[in-house]
Image (tube, rainbow, N blue to C red; front, side, top):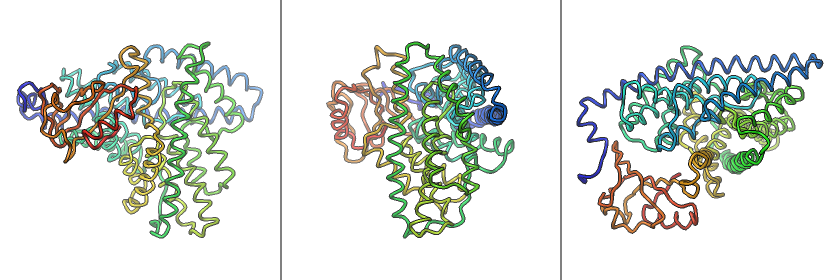
Length: 521
């Protein structure tokens, strides 16, 4: 290794038994992150109960409709105060964690935890269609950051603990420990190094253990399956994958369109735009309360099995629009659970068609629901491995793994072919731009992996002829994070983080493909 390179190896040598220390820290972060995520889950569950009680009361007592809107505007005012107090609680929180990992923002961990939990709960009491999983990831990551700062850990070690907390938060929110590990590494850490894998696994399992002791052993969105789909029905899966991929593109495009629409509203300050979805929520409470909150009532309706195609389509359209509106307003809450509920509606409608008109046995009804969730998740988030494992864990069996994988990868490929950016990548670029317009307005972050046969293997960076508009800002080699220099030699398996100009980005990507062969975002 070049003498000028800085890596974690240098730090390890100065700190004996670092692996064991990091594992113990992962256990500690997992325990506290799991407790915080479970507390948030408990608060949101009760907030949702309050919301539906308010909706039922107003429907039976129309004289109180004005009081309902006064209450919702009061909730909006309090949420706005929290958003002004800590702006980083806006949205799901996952882009904030990703920005923290690349040193673009610096969150005050204790302020985020307090404000996110309070404002997120109030948003659910107000009926907004938001999920708990994204916020749980941010809360868990902030627990990791807090423990790192309390023990005076260096920045690189702090990022490991951020990842551990994110995994534990998702694990506790979904009762899906493997999905927590994969999402944290695939989407947050961007690296599957052995050191990260071990500590993140410990944290995720700890968060899951706490969640299952405080709640129960059943995943939060569970559809029991009796039989595996026979291979002759996989043609239907491919069609469903195409449908979910197309709808994933629509979801991402509409989300960004709504975000830009809210930006154009000049008469309200950023934090007060929460009044718009809360006002719509008041109308929803009166007209169609089934689409309120995260979507547990819709899941119950699907479980009851009395839905017809017209009802499914109405629920899908209304839930889709209300979810996008709620999230685009900047309300503190995530998209994970609502998008899975949307996936379940797509799968339910598709299952009604194939079981009613294509001769498919009704015993496979739930199979189409779970694979549709995986397809939509993979198309929207563009993390197919996490989506596959998440849905498989929710099924409680790996017997559906192949069917889930087929639909997920078809949805993923369709969204990629249509050149639709992953939702969290788009949100990260938007947030980083807002935080630092002058520096990053025209920049984009790309990630590449150096594979066998690359023309750059075993060459120093200064000799590879990288385009002048591109800058390698980090190299991950196994468990090492290396600060790149001109004489740093590139090796097989190196993961490169590159800052590039947005102008002519497709041409730049084509050039970089020729250098590194594999590209992922």
